[in-house]
Length: 250
Image (cartoon, rainbow, N blue to C red; front, top):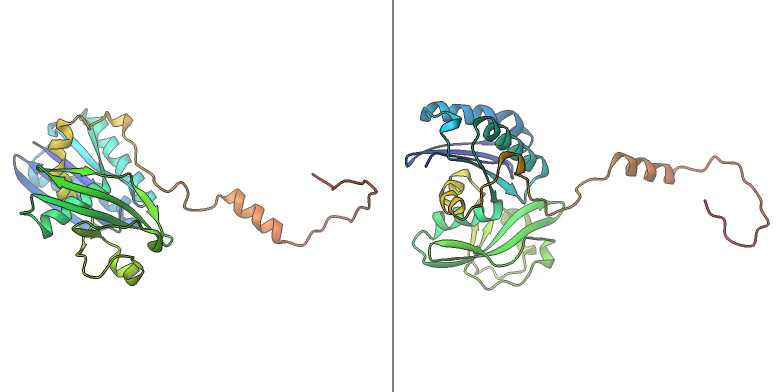
C-alpha cells in the first residue's frame, strides 16, 4: 500500500511514507514549529519516494488526544491534501500509535501484551488508556482518561509506555519494578497500524475527519479574563442608599 502518516500531537513532528513496502520517514521539532515544518517535510518525502498524492491509498494522522494546536494542524493538513487528491483520511488514536511504537521497540516478539499508554497533557495532567495486544492486533480496554498523576487508576499489566516518566517521576502511583517504556507516538507506528484499520473501515472522507479532544478547555477566553480583571478593580460607581427589605440584584 501507499500510505502517508503524520503526527504532531507532541513536541516532536513525525512524518512517514510507505510505498510498496519501502518506508521513508522524517522527525523534527513539533509544537509551534509543526505548522511551518510539516508540509515541507511531507513534500520532501513524496519527492524522495517518487509519489503523487493521488497515488496514495490513504493519509493517516494522529487524531489525539494530544496538544490542541498539533491536533488541529495535523487534521487540517491531512484534510487539505486528501481532499485535493481525492483519497480517504485515516484518523488514528495517538495513544494507540504510542503503544504500537512501544511494542515494536521493547517487546517485538510478544504474543500478548498489556500496556498502559501515558501521554503528558501539560497543566499537571496526563492522558491515559489501557491496551491489550493479542492475535496480532491491539484492543483498547477502556476509554481515554485525563488524570493528575496521583489520581491515575490502578494498573497490573505488563508495562507503562509514554513520555511522562521524567516529568512526573515518583508522583506516578505504580511500583518502580513495573517496566516503563519511554516512547512517543511516531508516524512509522501509524503505518504499521494503518492496513488493519483501513480493513476495519476506519477511513473517512476528508471533510469528515476530526481530532479527538479529551480536555474540553485549556485556557480562559478573553471575555472571561476581562470579567475577572474587572471584578478585582475597585468600584467607581456612586453609592446609592435604598430602603428595600430584600437583597439588591442586578
